[in-house]
Image (cartoon, rainbow, N blue to C red):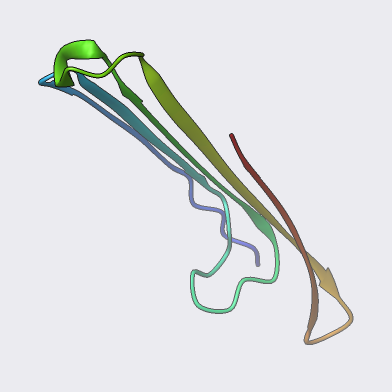
Length: 84
């Protein structure tokens, strides 16, 4: 029997010219030893000229991990990371 859990949450804040957002999507069957499912995490942060900077800048980070069962006890794990 395979039980899938899904959690989504987004946090946004704006404080002194800083904006940030965090998102998580988790369908793994176990957080300690996953054999199936997907974990995707994203994070964005942006700074504005409020801090007496010459420019506005920000960054984005994405981390996606996939798990596929292989045999009775094995698992194939895939990882994709991106940051800019």
